[in-house]
Length: 425
Image (cartoon, rainbow, N blue to C red):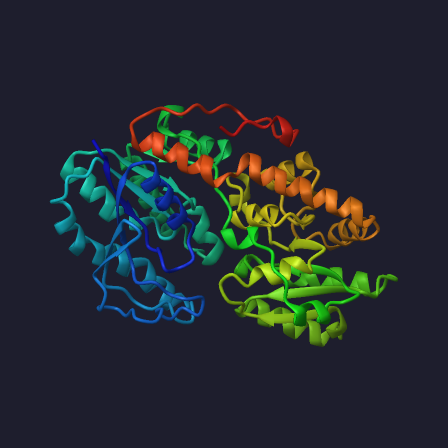
């Protein structure tokens, strides 16, 4: 008999989201899938064409039944907008779940990003139907929210911690993305390995599709290109980028260029500092790029870089952005410790430094700069192999399908001293 599941997520198609790929694969595995989600927004925070706060309630797309809630625009991503975004979806979803509770679901899968409160409606349906509910912790709360908001109040931090732990504790199982994240829940909630199956994350398809843009190719001709995708937003370490660029300017590598993608407060701050330090000749600011446009930049990229501030969360999770960079098949230079450092070292696909270590970033970049084209290509191939072996979309979907079917999945302790000996399965 075909199993019917409810998937809960704030974001879904036609937004660019990995969950859509996962749901499609679950359908191909024989599941009937309903999705409870919000209104789709573009990168500018505005609703996509044809959608608004109230208009669309029910859609069907490629055998996926989609139920949308009343929603608000994210707009400029201000703290007020972020707060509204955090509370409106969970609250408005309860109105929809009253109808969904009538459906004969076999399980609920919550694809938990921010905020953790989005778990509430899914947990309510599961409780009403007396069925298992699985939280796929794509983001670790409350640690992830502390990266976006400067929460100084110890009382409020304690409140967010207890709220987060409450939702996780209510789940039948919490699907985690790493052994380190499993240890976090084991320590904080006393959950067992059986209750914490490991399913590693997987990349966005955009990073797997390299394409050619003649205008961009001409613009970067003769340049050694360092790509800054701009994914990390508030975690972007502007001063580390500036100091690294100054060291490059002082060397004989006059053809090195930073290509910066994206918009936002940190990008504008970086643009201002580049002007102040008269580094304009070393930077191309490309602004916001359309969905699927990253492939044009990957074609002309020699190294993908990530200049990130210190963050505790990297001890528990592999940032999704890093998985994307591996999928691009390019050498990487990243200022992050924890899991990322062990992964990059073991794979031999680039270099890592401590956060905000400009001298280390400069040294790492120059090592790759001085390599032959063949050596760089081999390093990029190792990055791609690392992603394909350990962060596979098909493997993640298969494991989720097994969990939803009530089966147990094997998971062993990874040895991060060598990526070729790591077993994330």
